[in-house]
Length: 146
Image (cartoon, rainbow, N blue to C red; front, side):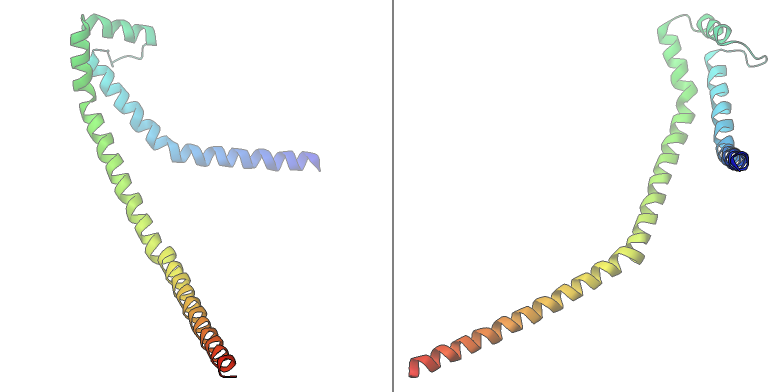
């Protein structure tokens, strides 16, 4: 019994891991490709896989000064920065659009219903106050005439 429970839990974890990997793989592949482009622009050799230390050494050799390095870094990341800026703006616009649609379909009708009910109750309360006021006025008038 316990073994089956553990087996089911393990299968569930594996299925979740595979699903997450499938969802994240395209983004990771894209990020890896962009990083390779930036490293090539900075002077790293992309022909062969190298260690981090070798890659840094190649970049240092091809960028003798901080000024040269910063200029190349700016050029190397320009397209990436613009793409990320564009994507962020589009995601914001998409989220805003979805929020507006949700507001229009879900929240606004509820707010209008609550407002209508509140207004109706306020009108009822005001009418009751007027009636009580009239009754009190009549009672005062009746007690004054006695």
